[in-house]
Length: 304
Image (cartoon, rainbow, N blue to C red; front, top):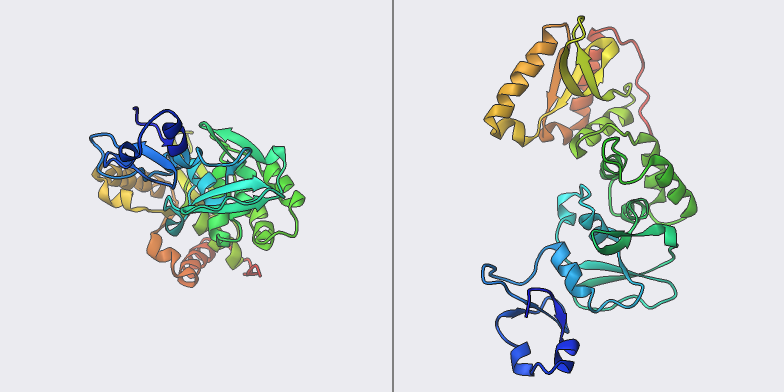
């Protein structure tokens, strides 16, 4: 018996007895499914991938993984409360009856072939459709962060045009107000979810939008740094510093050299942490003061 999940029904038809199927070396992630426990493992399958392989044995024909589960399989940057592997979200095409099983959240969905794809062996909702399906559970900041990840220029999973098309085809669904607000804020060069949140805070405040991940050079063309967010006209650079910048000594030293280099050429640097993102008014006020000190004369027009 290998470490792959198998159905109790198939094992019974092959002559495996009930006592063996109730053995302590077999995990029971779902009713009617068993998974051999490898000797080095102390518990039942717990990753999203393991659970999807197990429940696939019970899914009806044509079923697929959707919503949070599809997002997890694609490694999308979800907020912490949505990173648990249970329940598994399984979709079926309406009018088929939604799957009903313990540990499963079943969805009956109106969905076209263009909204499905195979991802690492799993049939899932497409990146564009998954983004829409998450919209009623994510804040605007979180939805933009996921959208930025999906369309990143170096490793795009979809395009802004595809996201817009999916939104147009699904007008009237829950979450579409957030989708419509998020679409014009998506950018292809954002490189982390927290950078995306910082940018959205700035845009909603009415401040001018900074450029994402701008390469900064000295007058001779020598590369100095790539700014998380920047106002090149005012030589103001905004940096989000995650914990890795503090805990990784080599990273910390590189940051000091990098930021010192741009400051030597007339740039100012504002650094922010997650604590700053929790107080947007103070964060925006800091940026506004620096912009005005460096020549910005605009008027704040907060987005409603």
